[in-house]
Image 1 (spheres, one colour):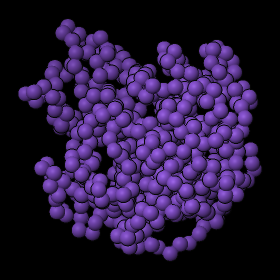
Image 2 (cartoon, one colour; image 1 turned 135 degrees about the vertical axis):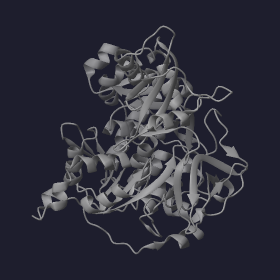
Image 3 (tube, rainbow, N blue to C red; image 1 turned 30 degrees about the vertical axis):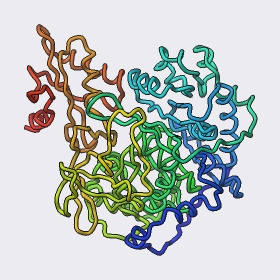
Image 4 (cartoon, helix red, strand yellow; image 1 turned 120 degrees about the vertical axis):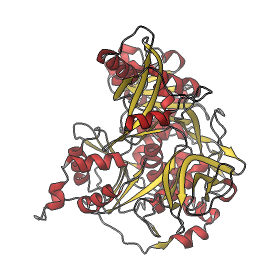
Length: 567
């Protein structure tokens, strides 16, 4: 590994007018800005995010700074990623992986995860994230739908695949004893046998390179196949909303098991040829503060939940009051970015006073990427509480129930006008699970209001998605898992407002005849959801009731349960 360090110098930039850039947006010029003299319309995500930087003489530039749970730091250059990803790509090829196949990891934020992502792309295959907190049901559903060919995991997570390994090849990262115990290939041993060169496979821009899943209120999670055509949209977000500069030390705290982390902690910064930071430790306010200080983080991205937890911890008070000028105990933040849920005024003020920088709100979805932002690199009004302005290359409108465009000041559903959005790439769910388009409109499902200045303001969902600690949880997934308990007859899940997490999950449960509710059954239900679904989606509160409120057609009226919970 190279011993190069990250630059800490800041580069001042003359602000660019948002109105000028947005109104004069040209897709051909953007593609030239990103890919230069690229010869045709065929792309490879590995080439875009690593190979071309090596080709252009930047092999020694640092691509990744990784800190493990013991505080050990690893730095990998683009050249080292190039060599290692070639070895993994050759290994995948030996397993029969071809363009269009899906390869997954269930790993913490490690260098190996990043190498596998690039190796998968190198073959024209599709990378599929599996979040480390997922339980058996969540994993099985995603692997079955995607027909996952190979999974890389570690000894700590291998047990979750004990009944799934027959359908896929398993590779253990880390413990050789763990590999032997399961009869799996060992990552390090297999890589040592592989050459460091392999030709990347270029594909049409509509070919997918990421396989995501998104939660909904009805049925199972829906597949989102992200095409290579998304790369320009990712670039726009990183360049103009995040304002990622060559001089920045950038840390996106989001887990790459989810869209925001995979899109904008891995793909986005590497696409720009910038360094990304991985902190393998789980969230802890002290660790977060120390990591920012140790690595001179200048550009930070996270969720409102994380910022609220930083605020409530009190550990940043000393930094904001430190008059000693001790540079070893100072933050270096130039700007901060928030996504996942609405950013409130209290957090905005706290970030400015305690972290010493502006924080801007951004809005997006797994399907769309970020499409509405307060842009750091573009000059426009940024009223606190606003989602921001449409990302260049996107035309947004507010629609009423009859799909008619509403005037400013009226609430309706936010939609993307597809024919007028050259940077918009989503074309439908992977297995056609839901129709997301009406005519020329992609419907986000979010209720939003547009103000006269062009800013957008979030009002809520038109369904029952629960936002908890920055994660989107479909209540149906929780409810179906609760129903697996043999004492449960019916179940409904809602979000309950929480000062730190935004919302926590509450389950209303109707028990079978003759069964009495108890603390023991409530705890069993919590444990069941935690094990089967995930550790972020389990109900922190279980309430037993005689009957669920329903419409005449039998649909659960969750809005009534939310009112009941608030009373």
